[in-house]
Image (cartoon, rainbow, N blue to C red; front, top):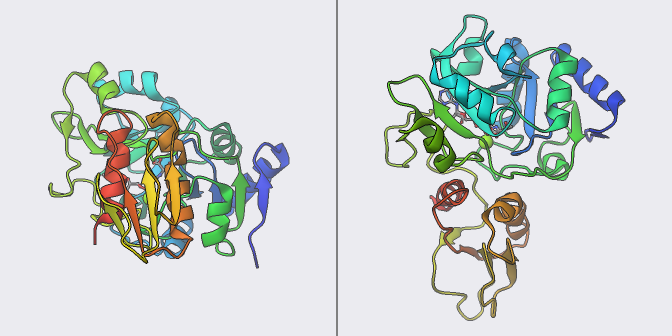
Amino acid sequence: MATRIADASDPEAIREAARIIRRGGLVAFPTETVYGLGADALDPLAVARIFAVKGRPRLDPLIVHVAGAAEASSYGIFPGPAHGLMQRFWPGPLTLVVKKAPAVPDIVTAGLETVALRVPSHPAALALIRAADRAIAAPSANPFGYVSPTEASHVAAQLGGAVDLILDGGPSSVGVESTILSLDGEVPALLRAGGITLEALTALLGTVEIATDPGAKPQAPGQMKRHYATRTPLEITDAGGPAAGERVGLLSLGPEDARGYAAVEILSPTGDLGEGAARFFGALRRLDGMALDRILARPFPETGLGRALMDRLRRAASR
Ligand code: TXA
Ligand code: MG
């Protein structure tokens, strides 16, 4: 049976979603980054269903979503530098990795001694966490390895039938996942580029170690080389176009010469990275739905949100 999609701005829908979470069910819900697939973080059986529905390996830990910094302190042990970060960037697209509190089940952290915590800023996400009165473990609401969902319809297309309710809170405004910063070592370490820029973190912290290279020792166990991937082969190139008889799609941040392409996604007419990020995953999905031979993606400038976008693009292109 197809899963019902409920309007996240309806308080009754939030109450129903909260009841589902409290009785061990799964709710797909909007966040400012991407849609999440949520379950009660303290219920190992409910969390196990997340892994099953996504087809996600158990060694890939989940982010725990909470309503605020005070709630976060029940699940993790926050060192000094965390406080400025929480004050500045929460609620918002920053996930902090810290030593875990005993309350967090092993299945959530894949057996690690650390836990990833974040306070989302989407009002429906916060309303759901508060109404359920639970911490909510949630990965992105897509089958493992595929393009992340930024609209309720993306979730319905792929996980409809497998989850108990989908809350529709409109398109995600940031459009790429949260930045993951580990505070477990001597120096704060960037584990995943995302919605909060490295520049913003460095301005506050001084030094940030960058641990995101695909070649680097995988510090974030879930940072698979191939991820966020379209079924259609994707190449990153700043030159070249379609050969004769070939159906090729073009993905570009700003305006481009689009002659000869079967489909074109220009993310922002002014080349704005914020607008580009908000439209990125939706554009990849549309191109992937067109039975193209190939997708060509123009590289993003690697500053600000462009760092997160290039990370997603490189993983999508990886074979
Ligand atoms: O924006 C987001 O973060 C979205 C929304 C739904 O909040 N969630 C998300 O979850 O992107 P997911 O599961 O697709 O990616 C979470 C990643 C894992 O793959 C893993 O790399 C990292 O978070 N992670 C979780 N716990 C960790 C830990 N204890 N240590 C290091 N990395 C961890
Ligand atoms: Mg994901």
